[in-house]
Length: 434
Image 1: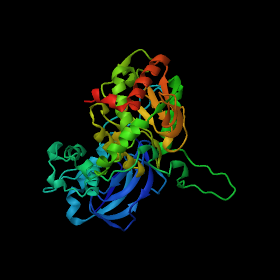
Image 2: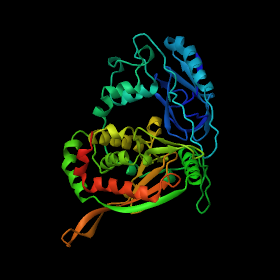
Image 3: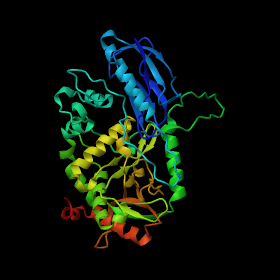
Image 4: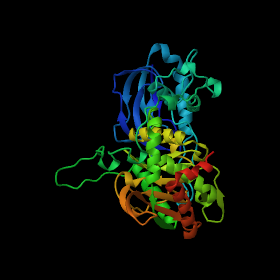
């Protein structure tokens, strides 16, 4: 029996996506949950997996083309012993597809998002753990047996949160690197799909996917937010010495301890004194909402372009926990597979442009946030000590951009000075840590 796989609503009101890569060819036998294709929305790269065991009979879209939600993506000839579930899955996919809708709003308004599951409908079978293809892929990557995990979803469905609760993801992750330098292959140097280029000729290619989303986001932020920049330098000599003392113990667990987790924790502490840096302003700038959680974003150079995943509830997390999440997001960014949830609900951002070079920058605020800081590269520079002697110190330049509608220069300076004091004298953070 042949059946079409209908491209489902993959969240965020997405109505179309680019077919990045096929992992199968017509005539190829595949297993249920086997990766079939990678599609790219303007939010993330999403893996589409098979809903049945069978044989691929037809691919409806070519690599580089734009597929529409609610339309067939591929056709599969289902094995005889799996045919009884075909109708259920096809109907479920169609329902998902019909729920898709696009967002249209004032350019200066905050985008409306939805929390749809980003994977296709999962088939329920006796004796088989209930889980979406995305959860099965995570389990497969980490050699986990889903049948041994108690699912908290409807009818015992195993959710991604169930894996996290068991600490299975963190314990078995192979962590490495800093998100800011997560990939040396950016979208600008990736080969363009479906374009031709002759020596000596100009080349034109469409701006789509993540790069198109970034273009819209930056344009809206500059149009709607009056930016101002505040710069300073931070002496991180003592902080780097502390990091060197702690890194061996933490890195034994496969967690890289960079300076970024320290900066995030110090930022969450400084926000307690200046909560306006962790707020949101409404569209017409008549109300201000102070956010309870400090979700700190990290500008990531991914193979698809700039993305800003964030660490949730930094104010409640230990340095070790923050470092583990930074490392995990780094790996996902390098692979071009950041989870869509990791890029939602950010409240303030850090751009570590110094990891690639340069000392100062004028970062653009990640709307609807109200502030962002760019970190320059660490330099060994001569500075006077308290005795008047010149010595080498490790210095980084910091460049804050703030929303001048609600943050004035004096507030930004005082906030930055408090954050800077935590970084220059990290022992002072001990009295504030929870």
